[in-house]
Image (tube, rainbow, N blue to C red; front, side, top):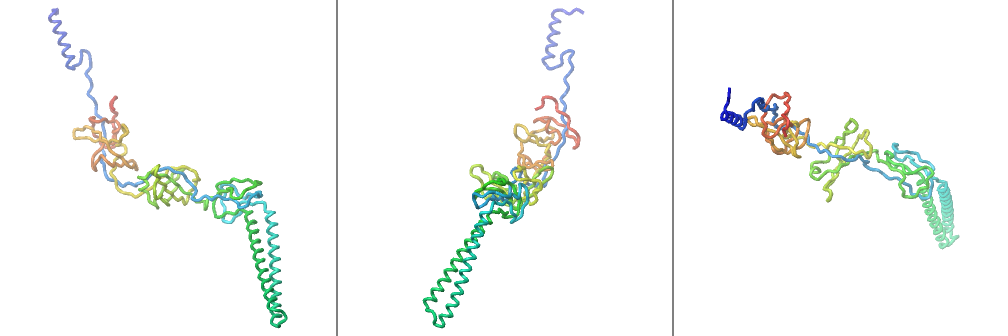
Length: 370
């Protein structure tokens, strides 16, 4: 059929008009309608929550004693302990060369024995003189002189006894004994070494007692009370402790305070081990939602609610503690409100959704969804 020039222009204009109205071009398939995402809903409801504070800190000795000797210039002749060894109160840990000290002690004992003999002689002379004085064979002045002589001998004996005690004390210093039961934690001396008074030679963890210490910011420090339980996971097991003390104040610069937890049964823990611990507080009720319902975007926490038209709305919330798959909602949500649980991570604000029963898997969102 022949189409005139005027008819050809009309046909071309009709095709362009259809294209401008959004209709499909000739030979082109129509675009498919966007699909909706299947989601499940869960209510925000009150649940029991065990309040806790999680913080890291080192395991330390409750009391670590620095041991040394009180004599100088003496050589170590015997070292009877090593690091990690458990010792008992009074046990000899180390011995020094005591030959010179033994000689001084023997001299002091001899001097004391001589002084004792002098006192005995002075007493015998005085006793005889008192009998002679009664018979008027000696004068009162002679009797007074003998009494003074006895007092002098007794004073000399006291001096000799003090010298003997001092020599015995120096001899005792040649043996370093454990001041308490405990565990040797450090050894800084070797046999044959010449030591000086006051120098640290050994360290002893008193009674083998360990504790866990942690620095808490002031807002968390106020939530911890003495007697609270501490749980320290370590090598597949949990070591339990109890808060012994909480620092009464906070550091003016760091704004932190220290908590001290006794570890009555430390098990495999060693001093210096750095652990994350959970300090358990009081249990109470809290508004909670499934943790899967909370999404993190732009550094904030959000949940999605669904209105009657099945449109998802993003809602910013403030979260708290997390326990057994549920997250506490501190602000931004009311009790009983339904939030998207399965499928929340695929949603964007304003998306149309299809609500299904819990347990159904959500469909993947179309590409390009924020």
